[in-house]
Length: 91
Image (tube, rainbow, N blue to C red):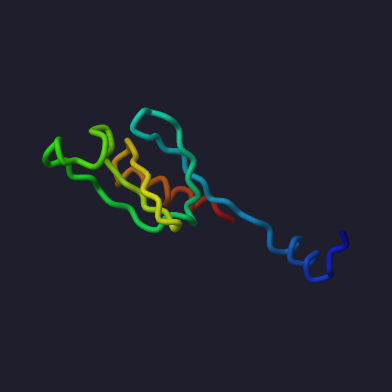
């Protein structure tokens, strides 16, 4: 497969940079999230355990650009800190 000159130049001068953070799900499984795919972050308020949507270990919910909700054990302030640290490491 031959690549066009534009495709070759774009691969040379526009490398793909992934900004990843590592967090934990409610069962303590490690989750890798691409910071560019995070749409919003919401704190979970556990009011009534019977009507609660999320596991009791979930403290923060990340909504991704594809519409999926990901419950995290970390607090939202910690997730925001991880995102800002990933931003600092980006060249």
